[in-house]
Image 1: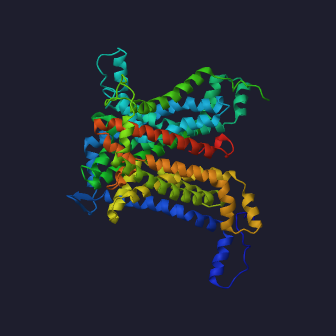
Image 2: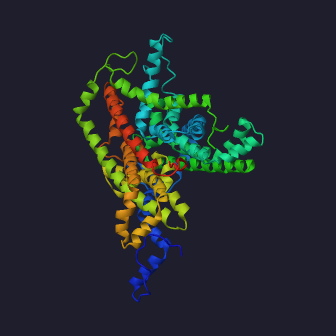
Length: 310
Length: 272
């Protein structure tokens, strides 16, 4: 037995009382002990996710009557969400904004991660911390910063006017979908680097030397060795950005304006001024389902693709 | 072999790109402190003159101080509870052969990939159905949910990195499990524990999306800031407050990341 965990007592001789038996079983079974140790974390996490989700799904089949809920089960909310063009438009806009932001973030982060993985040899830790530090600072403040920068009298406009380059403030900067994309790209940049960096760092350097020895130039070597081997990191990074950004409502609320409102703002409104919780629950469940479906298809497609390459 | 191999040859354009990228990450954020010292109600160039009055006005701002205190309370509670749960979880998944380890870790890490609005809404519905009044406690519950994955991710490399035989030696020398944990495991784990405490505190302190749904009448600091953004005359005060928060969280996070990575062998094992 290679049971080498921190158990002090030797396995006791068979005892007659049931308590002793349980104790013997407990000490002998590593799985049991492991799960006992894990149980507080697992139970709390599972409970505080599964129960709320179950109730949210249940509520999405109810209807709002004044300030009360009618708990007769009906798919009216989903039918309404599918019929009204506004929901479809908001969903498509959310997906488009998130997808653009994901592509931009990953494209911008890749060279950076590549640089730190292959070209930084001293103080690597400082570089890693520098790259990820902004992620840990207040999200709200980072979004607010862009409001200041892009605003009508903001940093860019007042700066350009001060330099005499423009006479009138550029109005398209703030309150537009592009403002949302810029802000989200900046806010999530730090999160994309780490998964890509980790997958690049793992690459066995001798593979690269082998590719060079066999006659590949730098470009061919990158396309045939480095890029395919770092794909898992790219996939992880894109999902890590895509999923939360679809559900973001702070950024569109602060810099998006009427044209930049996303589905999550609609969900938030259902729980606020519109006060139609069941509809909000249905929209939330629907959004989660669609995002999950897209993620699964994406993972499946990229897996097929990497299999083809290998 | 020491020389610079052809793969490791310095790459000038990439180096320039890296510096530009860091500038892109940091320069926007620097406008907060810059304008917080500007003697004007409007956040625009040209700068009017140096002042510290926005900082001075913070000291007498009762609602802001109350929100700050709320955030500290929620953050500290979240940090302690999430770290304890993280220690249990990380020890269990690294020290024991668990059948079904992967799905279990997946469940615990799930909040990382669920949009905050979904978690917030789901918890809000649960609380209202259970008749629980929204308060700082409900915010804390939500924050624990999103902090535990980070606590686990910080702790798992620590447990993987340290030599099991230390614990065995302690057991062989007659310590029981609790004393072994207290006198051997915990001191070795201490940097990881501290890093996790600091990270979870920062996450909770900055979190807005879930707090927005789960807070009752007592606002946390981000909610207070959000409520101020509607009033243009209050923006300079928000800038000053934001600058303070940025500086403090930069220092705290830099310290905690340094603690976290120092000691775990190799940089390849950087967690999230």
